[in-house]
Image 1 (tube, rainbow over the protein chains, first blue to last red):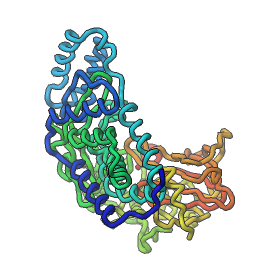
Image 2: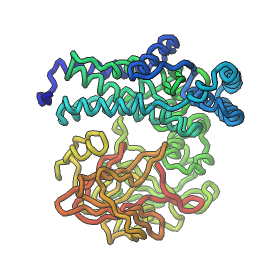
Image 3: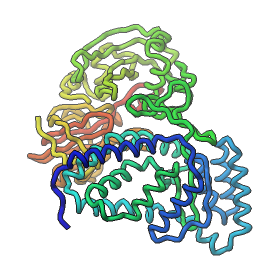
Image 4: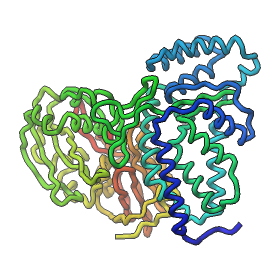
Length: 401
Length: 136
């Protein structure tokens, strides 16, 4: 097999762009899935991989519902564990899922043969997803020089990867992680896998248009028809798409007045300019909640949601000193040190206000505040304290990003 | 200024960086992580647990909610030793071999380039109920 070294032609580049756009549409869709179509395509993935089709197919409304379904199926043999885990997850959902799953479980236990029951539930992610990707990657590498592969990757990553994988999948995985641990990682996130699916989709189409890739094609078809799905031996749980998906210009998840992502069963996620945040940040930020938030990034989001000016006003913050920032890419960026009231933070502090040294996608540099011991009176000494060095050392900073 | 060798980053992180990254030997900051030349900031190495940076070392594990700061380098170009200090800020020491470069990458901050030499990688802290590490 000869490796291709010729750069992409304009026709190929156009094909790459249209494939990317198509996957972006699929990945941001809030159309309800067609359960029959989804079942058909998921079963086709099993067949293409040489596996028996699943005998039991659950349909759930959300990724959390999928996790609850998986727990139920996996623990059919264990009376207490299955009920407890299923109820726990179900309690987070609005549609009586726990009770429904319990009934389903009773039904399955009564009707499934012991043999099938024992074999149910082995996770097939490795067989279906991970192996496929490793295989495709080796294949595509062989066809496409490193340089072209990097080119293709860059083109797709900027859009699909950053938007769907980093933005949607990573955030929702984290949101689900709070509830369902390891179940999140094996869940196939349908169209949000599209940064790698599209990579191979277009990669193979461009390099070897005549050669079919049945496993990849089946995976692509499933991604087009499902929200998320969790493949197991003998059974599969399929989840619907979200009913709400709000993104700001540039594609990051954001909603200043409610959830940014929501599913039919009520499972939802709040996001502030791409950052997953607790509900209060968006719904009801208060100075007290802000001061007690341990995560600096969530706190920054909450203050932005509350309003920096309003927050500083609330604090009756008095500027003590201002100094040019060190090594900041904005030449005129400043560091401001403020006195804040003693009763907001648990220990006596001052607030040092700086600008992020990396711009947001819209080109602005966000402000954020860090708290330092109240006896510090110089802005640079305050920043030096956050790094645990003397101000003289801090002033030697050559670059900040 | 040095042109970045993009193949190092591609192989290590599957991401492509095609911008010029300044390769420096002085102190640098990437969000809430600092790079100080050894000697400028305290750090001790309680274990002799040194490893090659290649393919990558996550100096701050972003976990599920935060972002990773990741060192990447060619095979043999840089080594990593976990380190501690009295303030609990030091994470480790990275030593870049002569003629080599080590990069510190992050998905929301620009990549830093580290010239040959030894550096202490440190977290940022702030004052709350007690001192706490800055987590973003």
